[in-house]
Length: 136
Image (cartoon, rainbow, N blue to C red; front, side, top):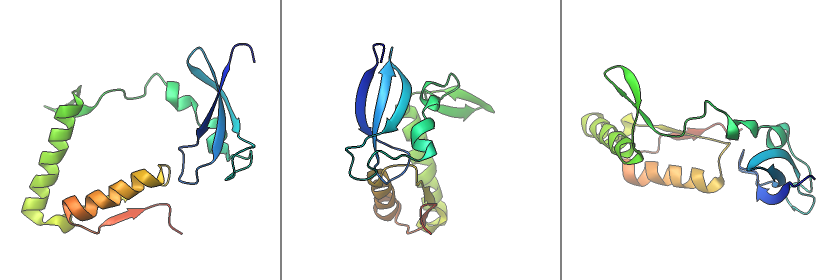
């Protein structure tokens, strides 16, 4: 392995929960393979689970929130970004009602993330307008 660490993890690409073994060297992912001990996938992976990891180290990956100010996207704090989102959603809800807001959930996230997304829409926003690409 040449100094690589092997890390067992769960694939975060979709909600299936396949077990993966990630080879990490110098704090970078070098290779991913399926975990043969994982009951969900028994060592198999889809092409995305095996090869879609280079984005983690992409140079153009966003690392801080951006808000458009005077027509330009500028870096901001997470606190300011959350405040901005909250104010915009509250204004839309006040003006047009909760059904003016919808959300699209993602099949490439965890089940827990999709659960909290629908819970937020139904309890905080007051809307059932939620959909996702993971239904057939």
